[in-house]
Picture: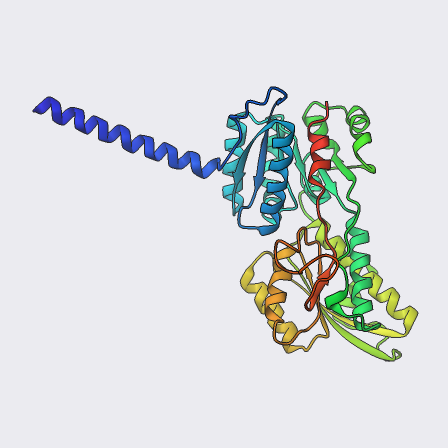
Length: 373
C-alpha cells in the first residue's frame, strides 16, 4: 500500500510539471508550421513577432503565414502585449534558434524595439519590420511606404473634404507603393554583414535602399519645424476667407508617425496660404493609452472641430466610434488594413464618415528580402 501511494504521488507530480511546461510553451510560442514536410521547404525558421491584440497586425501575420506556407518555409509565432512580454517572447525566439524575425507595422513591438534590438544583434538574428522607425530604433531592416509623402497626401484629403466639400463616403482610401528598404548600418555590422553586399542582394526586390543608424530617443520634430506653430493656432487666420478647425491625435511618439504629423501640418499650411484659407490645428499624443486617447477625442468634440485626423489604427477606430452620431469627418493616416478593422466598407468606397491613407505592407515583397540568398 505504501509503495502504491508513492507511485500515485509521483504520477501526480509529473502531471503537474507537464501541465506547467505546456502552459509556458503555449504562452511563449503560439503556433507554428514546423511539421512542414514540403521537400522544397527552406531550412530557415522564421519567427513572427507581433501583438495578437492589434487587428492590423493579425491580418498581416495571416498574410505572412500564407506566403511562408506557399514557399514551404517553417515559422513560429511569438506574441506580447507589453514591453516585458515582447522581451520574453524574443528570448523564446532566440532559444528556439530562429534564423530571422518578421514584425509588421505593429505599434506594441515598435514601442519595445529599444528593449530587444541588442539581444537580437548579439544572437545574430536580423529583425525585418514594416516601417523605417523600427530600423531607427535598432531593427536590422524596415520596409514600407514613404511616410513623409503619406502625411502630405493625408493633408490633401483633409483639404479636399473641408474646402472642396468632397464627400467622405465616396472618397477612396489612398494606398502607396511600399518598396523602400531602410537598413540599420550599426546592426548590419553587428550581425557580421557587409552593407554594400546586402544592398546589392536586396536591390532586385526594392524600389530604393536607405541607410540609417540607431537612435535611442526621438527628438520632437515640432520643436524645430516651422510647422510647429500650426499646433497652437491657425496661420493667417485674420486674412483668410475661412478658418477650419482640425483635431489631430497621434498614437505614440514614433519616428514614422511623427513624420506623418509634421508633413500634414506643413502641407495644410502650404495649401491654406495658396488658397486663402486657414487651418487651426489642435494636436495631441495619447502615448498608446486608450483612456488618454478617448479623452483627447472628447476634447476635440467639445472644441467642435470640423474634422479629426487619427494617426494609426487604434486612434482611427476610436474616432470612428466617437463620431457615429455626429458624423464628423475622420481622416486616418497609417492604417495598415482599414477593411479588416471595419473602418471602411472598401478601399474604393469607404461608405461612412471615415477615409484616409493606408500604409499597407506588401508581405510577399518583404519575404523576398528575408529569404534572399
